[in-house]
Image (tube, rainbow, N blue to C red; front, side, top):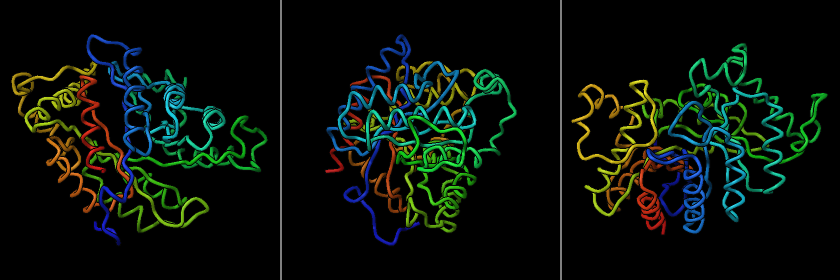
Length: 338
């Protein structure tokens, strides 16, 4: 879908989605050091925001205590927006999230984003361990969003107030990988971020629902969409393809029900996985939303995606094993921004 005004690298912001990967042979402490290193580099390179995502019971992802990690990254950077992409709201009491992000906003004024997802982001056993009950359903998500907005308002309806939190202007985003949150974001006039980096099949439908049903609010006069995309850039196409095998292994092992730490690159995935498994991961990591290659390949892929979707902003994930390769990948994207 083309936007009214053609959009390019020069007029839309680019941001970073960090899954805080824990590499094979490493640990969470090393992951957090790498995240700080990456955040400081991308801030200097001109990226707009830096988001971390809530995952649980995943040996290869360190950002389970998402608000804590956000505070750590915000404290190590100067001006870039830092946020959650996202907090899985059904896992939590809304008051706790209001207090956590009220605290973050009080510590780092004007720099905190709160992206909200409705999926539990885990299996039932993990969901039970988080909540101690499964009574809270994803169908209660709109009610929870309303509660959270009330806690942040100047004059909350609730008898309970969030301290810190009340009266703070913390941008709330709705995140989605299907049409549900697209419609809710449109109804509430909130910015919307779609997980096209792993759910490309639903992208067009979600964009249509959000844009066609959008209702202006005090927050937004018109729709604002940030789309997730995977980029693995290197100095040659061959090098980029090899580096990308780490992310493919991660998805393939998830499909097998055997999540692992992020594995080092391999030369030939066909020696490890079946043709059916490789075909399945190809559907998830669609070439339009998982761009792998040298600078020119990445430029063409990103320009095509921006023009096709009319995205207002892109948030770029790069599941890369070696930190130097991860930094170089974002550096290449930063060079394209110039």
